[in-house]
Length: 527
Image 1 (tube, helix red, strand yellow):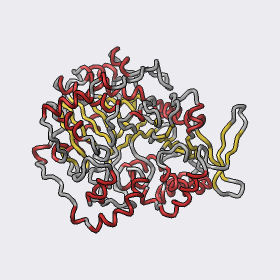
Image 2 (tube, helix red, strand yellow; image 1 turned 90 degrees about the horizontal axis):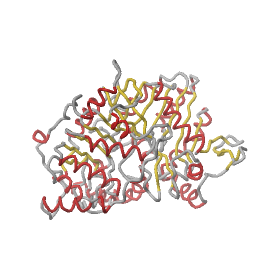
Image 3 (cartoon, one colour; image 1 turned 45 degrees about the vertical axis):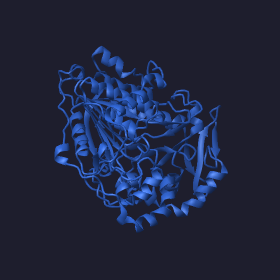
C-alpha cells in the first residue's frame, strides 16, 4: 500500500476503530486437510539433470544476476515451460496486465501437463480480479492461496476495503516476499513483482531492479520457507473468500479468453546480452549447461505471523530479515555499498551507520531522488536523515529520472520514468544481499520480507558493477552546503565539468511545497 493511500486512510481509521467489532470473520478452514509440502527435487528431471551437470564438485549454490527485466521474466517463463513436477510461486503483487496474464497462462499450461502449481499471493492488489484468479484455480493441479485476505468489498479499491473491513491491525500486515521455484531444483528470487513496469514494458514507469537465478543447496531451504508461508495461519484458499456466479467450466473458459496470447501484447524481443555480458538463461538451458557463480548462500524470511500487531517500532526478532542483515553489515571491515529505493534508516539504522563509520568503514548509499521515487511521501522520512548521514561521512547518491535516460548503457526507458526498486547491498566486495526488504520501518517491523546472503567474490564484483553503473552514471551525488546544511546535488555536464544544483532535481516547486507542508504530519511510523 502506498504511503499516500495510508495517509488518506488515517482520517477514516478513527471510524473504523469505533466499529472494530464489525470486522468480518475469516472463513473457517481445515488446515490439517490443506497442508502440503514442496515436492523433493530430482537430479533426473530435465531441469535437475542440467543443474547436476552444471554443478562443480563440492560447490554449494550457483547464481546468476539478472539486472535486465526482459531476461528475468523470460527465465520465469522458461522454468514454467520446462517444469515437469512442481511450480511454487510467492508474490506480493501479480498484476493481471500483459506480463501477469502471460505468466498465468504459462502456469495453466504447466498444470495441464500434470505439474503441481501452488501460487501464493498477498491479497492487497487483487481487488476486482477475483474471477480471473478463480479461473486459474479452477484448473486441475492448481491451488491458489491469499495472505491476509480481505473479506468485505472484494471488488472495491484498496481504500474502501481497508476502511470498511474494520480490521486494520491485521490488514496492515502484508507479505512482501518474492519467490519462484521450479521442480525443487531452480529458483528466481529478488525484488521484482510480476507487472509490466518491472520488466520494461510500461509506457509510463519502469523500475531498475534485480533478480537472481539460483540453483544448488540453497533451493531446498527456499522451498521450506515457501512451505512455512503456504501452511501458515494468515493464509487462506482463494475460494474460501472469493465468490463468483460462474461455475468451474465457465471460469476456465473466461480465463482462457483473458489470457489468450492473441489478445496480449507479445513479449519484447530479447537482446543478445545484458550489461554483465550474459545472454538469456534459455540459451544455457538449451545447451544443457549453466554458466553461474558459485558460493555459500543463506536464505531467510520473516515469520508469517511477524508479531508486531500492526505497530511500527517493535523489537527486532532473531527470525526477522532486518535482524539477519545486521550481523553481516556490522562485520564489515572496509566498505558497505547499499542500493535501496526507500531508505528511511530510523534510529536503529542511524546507529548502525554510525557504528560502521566509527570504525572507518566506507558507506555508500544509492536511493531514489524525489524526482524518481514512486513514493514521494517516503522521501519526507528519508530526507530527515540525509544531513546527519552526510555529516557522518556516508556517501549518498540519488537516482535521477533525467540522468537515467541519458545513460546509454542502461535499459532504454524511453519516455517512461526510471525508478530504483532494487534492494541490494555488498559488504567488503565479498558478501552480497539480494531480497525484498526496504530499509524502512514498515519492512523492519510490519511487512514480511525475504532475503538471501551470498558469499562469493565474483558475484559481489558483478553486483557492485551494476550498482556503480546506476550511481555513477544515473544519479546525483549529494553534499552539504557551505553552511553545513543539506543539500547540494552534483553531477558532470556534457563536457565533464561539475554541475551543482541547489533544489531537488527533476522536480517543480509545487511538489517541494506540498512535501514541506506534509512533513510535520508524516511520522516515520506511517512510512
